[in-house]
Amino acid sequence: MHDHNRGFAENRFDLILTNPPFGSTTNLAEKPYLSTYELGNNVDAKGKKKPRKNQSSEVLFIERIWQFLKPGTGKAAIVLPDGILTNSSMQYVRDFILHKFQLLAVVSLPQCAFAHFGAGEKLLSSLSASVQQAKSPMVMKPYLWLHRS
Image (cartoon, rainbow, N blue to C red):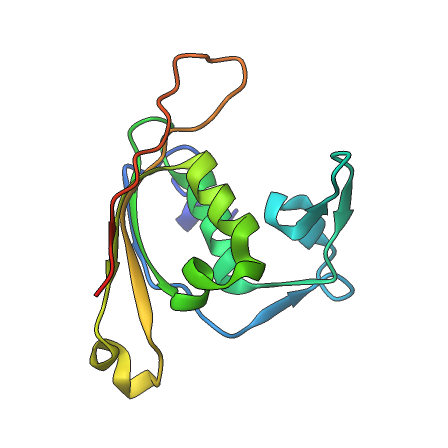
């Protein structure tokens, strides 16, 4: 990293507030690093990983946020597209969120909140990073509080 980003490292942030870019896709053929992300891979019933051909930027941001938060104490609030929380094809992302974070709230925002962008969004509020490490049996399981308007 550049000198001006010296403090920008994994497991260092107490709080991340973000509205990740929506709509762009990372393609494995163009960006081989995609397979280094847990969410950049499919896992079959036998647990075998196979790289995805592409992944949306907002999904990769969720994993990156988890990587940058301090384990156990880091918090994040993320604006996400409604589909991540509602589409059946995104169940693996919801599973990742519930496994990696202590989920404190999901807040539905009104359509007019982002009307000038033409998007209906949800705000995942206060995702507390309780890093789920297999070697630590004392890690808290996620809480889930859901508010839907």
